Image (cartoon, rainbow, N blue to C red):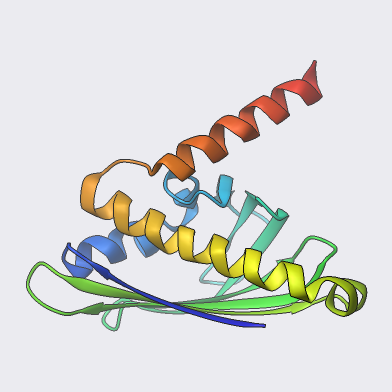
Length: 167
């Protein structure tokens, strides 16, 4: 399954790149699909990775490529929820003017056999909607310094669910 999302941002490319790459481990600050994120300590790779609690479950990522000059970031999933067999993402930030830029997010996900056979018709639209919201979350956070309503609702739901598990 391939998802491509492009979004115009009213902020310099460097500001978008700062949030996307230089604060890579803090995607939980802005992404409604990520409720918790942290650097992975178990990696020996130079570029590192992160662990996230996402709306799809626990996800682990390994960074494959970063180019600060081109503002390009690529990573793959090495720990995924059971429904996902593999995944890789490519984020690119393009300057379009002095105070404007464009976010391009390419995501390739291969579902595990049973979900692919039985639920692709349901999972693909949801995943596309969630990734579109994630890019919108990034745009809003960069432009305003604040979280979207979708992010606030996602975090409240996660905290409530987490609280019920510890009670």
